[in-house]
Length: 140
Image 1: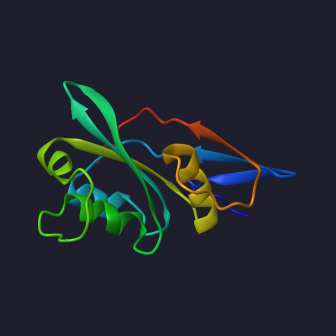
Image 2 (image 1 turned 180 degrees about the vertical axis):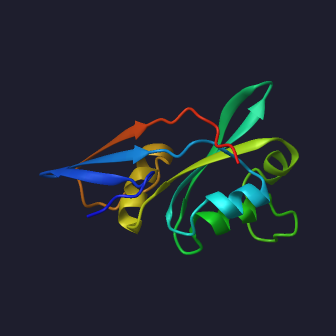
C-alpha cells in the first residue's frame, strides 16, 4: 500500500496499538496558502499561535467529513457562523497549522484520546503515539 507524505499509520501488537504521526511542515494560516497546500482529506489538525516569536499550541482537532482544507479555511473565515474554538485568537494573531492524514475515524478517536483525553474507540487496551516532528515552515 502506497503511503503519502504526512499520512499516519498504526502498528498492532495484540491488544496494543502504536500510531505513527508524521506531521507536515508548519503552514501559515492564510486562505491562499491553505487552499493550495492542505489536502481535502480526513486527518488531524493542530493550530499554533505565534507569540513573541514562539509557537504555542492552541488546539488539536480531527477533521473527517469536510476534510482538512475545509476545516482550516473555516477557522480563518470571519464570516463563518459555525463553532470555532479560540476564534478571536486565531483571527487576531499570526497562526500556523500542521496536519497528518488519517482515513479511519476510530483511529483518529484513539489519537485524540492521547492528545485531549477524550473517549477512545475501545478497540485496544493500550494506545501509544509516536510523533515525527517536522520543524520547518512551509514556504510558497
